[in-house]
Length: 461
Ligand SMILES: Cc1cc2nc3c(=O)[nH]c(=O)nc-3n(C[C@H](O)[C@H](O)[C@H](O)COP(=O)(O)OP(=O)(O)OC[C@H]3O[C@@H](n4cnc5c(N)ncnc54)[C@H](O)[C@@H]3O)c2cc1C
Ligand SMILES: NC(=O)c1ccc[n+]([C@@H]2O[C@H](COP(=O)([O-])OP(=O)(O)OC[C@H]3O[C@@H](n4cnc5c(N)ncnc54)[C@H](O)[C@@H]3O)[C@@H](O)[C@H]2O)c1
Image (cartoon, rainbow, N blue to C red; front, side, top):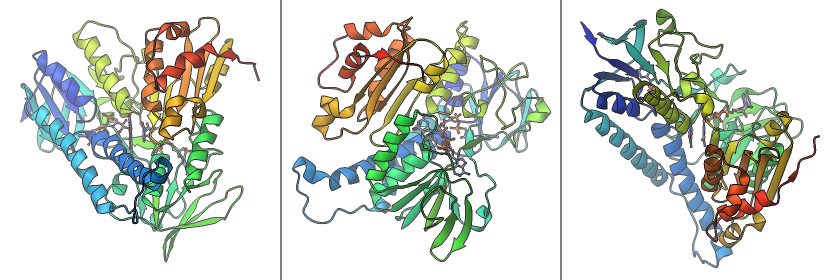
């Protein structure tokens, strides 16, 4: 039997549930289909568990540094990995069950458990059920990409999902991929006491960032004992008595690393391959991302794609912003667009990297006259007082319009302090407005007016 609704939502990740809330509140009947865990990637295998692990790793790190603060710990410092995992599981379970309870209590919402597939442009199949609606919202997210790499099928590799099942310390964790996922896990497990090697095929870590930022992050990780191997262009795997061997073709260093565990962190791929998109005629790009316009409409009228699966963002806040855009356009008579979004994100190494807008390289590529200000965290009082003065602040602005183009705050509290700049960019105000504010002392944010006040013309190179 076919059941009819006003709208269907596929996926209970970051955009689907709040959209269900808005649509049902507007009086619509909605079916939401989830095949696995409520909360999707962020809650279950992404942000929430990893940032909970970051907190445990920070505690371990600080315990080892206790003497720097005049604190005496008598006896050995140990990490109980089973306890660490139990803490993660509790935080995740709490978040997931909150999400599930919220959806369960939503009037006019029917939740289906199972894999949704398109039968046509207005009908989905979920097991034996056929669901139909004039509007369909796709929020299917993504999963770890496992590229064809020589020997990969012969070893037991881990992904961000299976990493979370570990409740003992790897002897030597080899991480393939030196970007967000790889670097967060690298520092976490190094601080827990594992030997860690990061193998990155590119010439530097987090290559989307400017070179000075990449270098500063590498310095932080290496100072803690993480081995970094960049330029690893010819990676191959083979089973080994101690786990797995990873053959490298790096410009320097040993040509082989033996790891007890191998984590693949080489990017994500959208969950669009088993959705029956072709039966609805929904266009995808060459990587499987659903093609959308500036208002997140797919190539088929009445069908939208939100979150990681549309390739327009890869973060929880961008997925949530997709929900806000679609809801505003459909229900509030607004005309919000993805292209109005100022890119911002954080990398949760310690210290974290807070980022907004363009990198210096991207700003230079505009050809506009630029101003740039930088300040090492060794000249930020709050960082010195906390004994955490690694990193730097860097702000680039348009010399003509006085608008900030972008900024990076790699330093203690950088993930929070960056919001002062996100806000002024969103308000479309000149950087001089920042200099009228009276920031609180002592904070990292209080140095932002100083950095913009000291900006100098950037010579073209
Ligand atoms: C290790 C890691 C750490 C991360 N840390 C951060 C961070 O600190 N900050 C940040 O902003 N982002 C972070 N991210 C990224 C963030 O998790 C994602 O951007 C976000 O979860 C995307 O949300 P989404 O709603 O698009 O998809 P998801 O959260 O992936 O949700 C999609 C849902 O759809 C369901 N689904 C898929 N196909 C079907 C189908 N056919 N039928 C029914 N249901 C289906 C899935 O089961 C899933 O529940 C991290 C990611 C990883 C992997
Ligand atoms: N703090 C956060 O917000 C956060 C944290 C983790 C993940 N995420 C999200 O998850 C997404 C995926 O993260 P990711 O780190 O897996 O992917 P990524 O796409 O950011 O980086 C993949 C890295 O792997 C390298 N690589 C690719 N193929 C390789 C190979 N064969 N051998 C060695 N290195 C190789 C790339 O050069 C790149 O540095 C991110 O785009 C981000 O949106 C966000």
